[in-house]
Image (cartoon, rainbow, N blue to C red; front, top):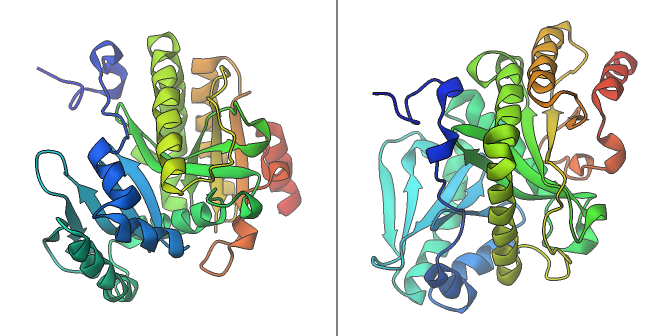
Length: 326
């Protein structure tokens, strides 16, 4: 008998689906704020090239297209930190017991060596390369300091819901204190335009997610991310002066972002048509579909990767942009 994990996407039963919230446990937040895990947080706050994102009862410290550390446990079991050796071309995992301040300090002391090892190994092919660009973008559009923030703030990466995935979750700062939620799909190469992870599938996933349960799952997602923002503010990962209250009642937008990719290529025509067809079929219009383009995306292009309001285009504007750029 098929389940939600094995059934066809079109047969997914949203009525029985329950999602684990992205939220640190009280013990994890307390230990990061001023307890035994504080050295991990201090490291993240001091290092702009790493990023801390909250997961269900866990967190990841991301770097170089991978995870420098995954933090888990702390309620019934001691805090642990896990590193996949796949990021350095080996097998297995390194697991550290983070049961004291000294243990966390030793873990942090080992990060520089681990970072060098990750940089030296470019394995995992294009997926690692795309995640690396993703992390360049989120670094340029963080909200730890409002003085350095762009027009948009990325609040999370790699959001999964009901077997649908979105690369980035963000909002427009000008809409605070009640901004609209924005989901983003990032495309950096030709091979990612078609197929099971292509633009057409993403359009279908976005439309299905918005319609499911009469919008119930979108509302749950908004509450989930309101909680994430609150925790990140308390930890100093987002500015305490953000002024966020809640997400607006407006439906989320879907931003398709191209980076380090020539959007003028003819190969994009068919995937774009498929994306638009799926969105229009499910939502009745292309009003919620937006586009942005970063021609260059690398370690040295932080300023160029700040997302500005004038860069966000609707469907017609994006077509015109492709012609002008050509």
